[in-house]
Amino acid sequence: MPTPAERQALLFFAAVAALGVGVNAWRAARGGERLVQGSPSDLAAQIARVDSAVAHSPSREAGRAALRKRNADKAARKRNPESAAPPAAALSSPISRLPSPISLIDLDLAPTASIESLPRIGPALAARIVANRDSFGAFGSLDGLQRVKGVGAAMAKALRDRVTFSGVARADAPTRKDKGRRRPAAP
Image (spheres, one colour):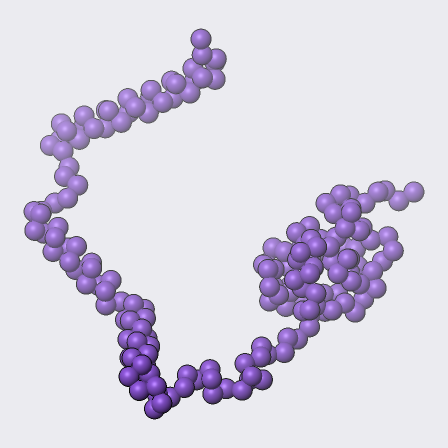
C-alpha cells in the first residue's frame, strides 16, 4: 500500500502523462506539426552548410595553419638535419626561460583584487579573506590565514612563496581550530 506521499507523486505523474497525451491529441486534430519541413535533400543541404561553416571557422583555420607549419618544419629537419634551423627554445638562454619574478602580496593589507590574482583563489575566497581580516585583524602568518574558511594546509603551502604578512595577529583572534565556529563570549 503506497504512503500518502507516494500517492501524491503518482497522481502528479499521472496528471503530467494525461496532459502530454492531451497535447499530442490536440496537435493531431489540428493536422499535426512536422518537426522538419522540407525534403531529405533540403536537410542534407543544411547539414552541408553547417559543416562548411564549422570547417572554415577562424579558430579552426588558425589551428590547422599552425599544424601545417609545424609539420613542414619537422619534414624539413628530417630531410636535411644540418641545415635546418634549431627551434627557438634552443636559441634562448636558460636564464631567459626562468619564470618572471613573483611579487609578494601582503595579505594583511592587500585589496580583494590583488588577492584574487593568487593561484587557487577566486572572488568568493578573496572576499572571505578580506572580511576575516577586517573582523579579526591581521593574519600575521600562514597559520593565521588558515582561520579563513576554505584555506587549509594545502592552500597555505601553495601560497607560501607568493604571500607575505606585515601585521601581527591579535591574541584573541580565532585559530584554525576554531574555523567555522563562533568565538566564545567575552567574560
